[in-house]
Image (tube, rainbow, N blue to C red; front, side, top):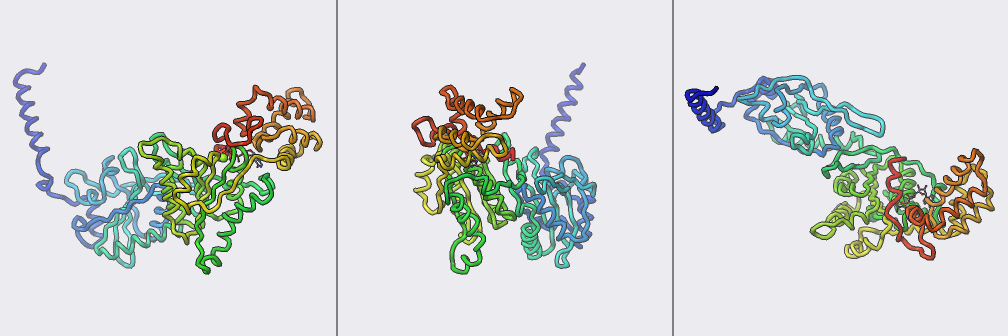
Length: 473
Ligand SMILES: Nc1ncnc2c1ncn2[C@@H]1O[C@H](COP(=O)(O)OP(=O)(O)OP(=O)(O)O)[C@@H](O)[C@H]1O
Ligand SMILES: [Mg+2]
C-alpha cells in the first residue's frame, strides 16, 4: 500500500529527477574515458580537444575499407570498445570524453562478410585503430552499418592533430579501397530487403555460356559481342583517337527468346570485368551499381527487364527510369563501362529513350526464332537423346512462333513422357508432346514460354520468364 507520505516523497523525488534531467550538459564536466586516455597518449595531445572527421562508406564497401585500413595501419594497435550497447550509437568523440559512460579498450567487434561467391572475410564491425600515417599519429574507428540503430552506412572516423594529414589519410584510404577491392572482377547483384533498402551486394558465380549455346540469327550475337566486348578490348586505341568508351546496349524481343542467355554469354567471355546485375525491383540500386562500375572499370552494368521500372506507378512519372538514364548519363564517357539492358516490352521504353537520346547506342533485336533457328534450337536441346533429325526438323517446322524456352520445355516433356512408361524417349513422344503444347488448352503455358499465339508474332505474351534463371545458375 502506498500512503500519502510515500506519495509525497515520490513526488519530491520525481521533481528532483526532472531538474537533474534539465541540467544543461556543459555543466557536467567532460571527463576523459580510459579509451580517451589511451587515444590522448597515442596522439600526444588531449584527445577531447581534437576534432573528428567522418567518412561515410556504403556498407557493401566495408570489406574494402577493412582491408585498406589494415594495410594503412601496418603494425598499429587495434582495440575494441567496451561500454555496452551505447557504443553502437555513439561516436569517437563520445568514446573519448564522456561524463556518464566510461568507455574503455575491450574486445573488437567482428562480422563475417562475403568476398566472393564462396569466400568470406572476418571484418572489424566496430573497432579503433591507433596508427601512424606519414609518421603522424592518428586514431581511426571503423564500423559497419547498423540498421537496428538507424545507421544505414558503414563509417570511418578519424582523429588527428593536423587536418592536412587527416585529408591525405582519407585520400590514401579511398585509393587503397579501390586498389584492394574485393568487388573488382566479380559478378555482383543487389538484393532489396522487404523494406526497400539494400541488403548488400551478393556475389554471383560468373555464368558459363558458350556462343554455341546461344541460338540466334546470323550476326545478332556477334553484334552485341562487338559492342560490349570489343570496345573494351580496344580501349587504348579508342582512347588515343579521342573516342568514348561508355556504351549502352538494349536487347529487346519477346519473352523467352534468349536475351538473358545473351547477357550470360557476354559475362562468360569477359572474365575480370566487374559486373553488377540488377533485376526488377533491384534496379533501384542503379546509382550504387554505376558507382561501383565507375570505380572498378572495366565494368558491365546489367539492367534486366528494365520495362518493369518504366511501368512502376509513382506520383511523379517514372522517377526510377530517369534515375537509370541519369546513371548512364552521369558516367564519364572515358569510363570503360557497358550498360546492358533487356526488355520484352520495348514500346514502353521507346519514348523515354527517344526523349533523352544518347544513352543507348545500340539496340539489338532478339527475335522469335525463324525456321532455321528453330531447327538448331530443337537439335541443341535434344543433343544426346535418341530423336531422329527428321522428327526434330518436322517439330521445328510445325512449331512456328515458339521460342527457345519452348524448345527446351518440349524436349523435357518428351523425355518425361517416356520415363513414365519406363522406356527411352522416341520420335512419337516428341510428336505427342508437341501436339499437347500446341493444343489450345496449353495457351497459357505457351505464352509463359514466350510463344506467340497462332497468327501473331509479337511480344504480347506474359511477363518475364527467364530473368530469375540467373540465380538458378
Ligand atoms: N536463342 C536461344 N538459344 C538457346 N536457348 C534459348 C534461346 N532462347 C531461349 N533459350 C532457352 O530458354 C531459356 C530462357 O531464355 P531467356 O531467359 O534468355 O529469355 P529472355 O529473352 O531473357 O526472356 P524474358 O524476356 O522473359 O526475360 C534459356 O535459359 C535457354 O535455355
Ligand atoms: Mg530475361
